[in-house]
Amino acid sequence: MRAELLRQLRGLLPKLPDPLEIVAEQILGLESRIDFVAKDPRGQVVLVFLADRGSDLGVLADALAQCSWMEPRVADWVKLAPQLGLRPQLGVRVLLLASHLDPRTIAAAKSVEGPVIGLGIWRPVPTGAGTEILVELLGAPPPALAPVAEPIVSRFRTGLRAEDFGG
Image (cartoon, rainbow, N blue to C red):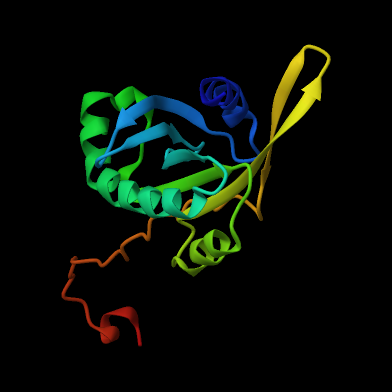
């Protein structure tokens, strides 16, 4: 069941409102596996986790730890594969997909500062040929934070005074 679910999600992630391009699957992170490492259209890394019913709160804790583990490694991924277009300065966020979300998971996700955690519910939809997965994201997908530009400070000095300008 899980393998089939992951296969179908692989095809759904690029079709989300904030489409995700899969970069890696089933990679070993900090003590456990990350289902998908993806990037959004801006180049921000998104870690996608699939939670079984009743495990979403624990998976959320793991996802936050994995996010913290992955963040300093994104720059290394850029060195190894610059063609991926990853942008480490945008940070890493999480998308947790579950068949059911515990209200504590939703509350915990909302309490994390910034647009770090996205939540979604997947549902099986019977079709004539079997079952298809439908994903419903809760709220809008968290937008990537734009990097804060450093103010431009001119170091150029002319030696001119206000009087030189006719003032």
